[in-house]
Figure 1 (cartoon, rainbow, N blue to C red):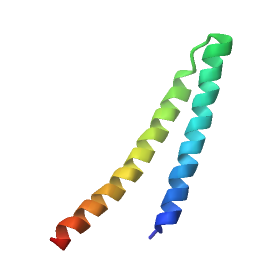
Figure 2 (figure 1 turned 180 degrees about the horizontal axis):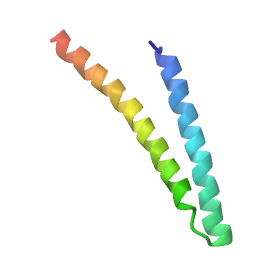
Figure 3 (figure 1 turned 180 degrees about the vertical axis):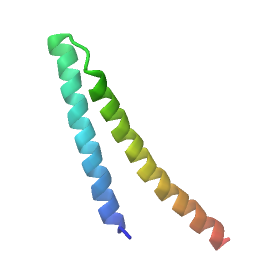
Figure 4 (figure 1 turned 60 degrees about the vertical axis):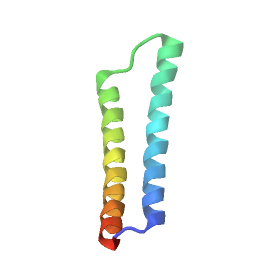
Length: 70
């Protein structure tokens, strides 16, 4: 099982990659006045979904441990 610091690093890496992709899309919109490719937008959304699932699984485990402690 992953440690908290490993999870934190995983989340950090995913956020950095997503941020970079969104900056590239944003620059294209501003500088070239073109919309990003639909596939690029879908990929960014998939990264957000994966990050959300990772974070939700962590919250679900915390909720279960709090319930069992009661």
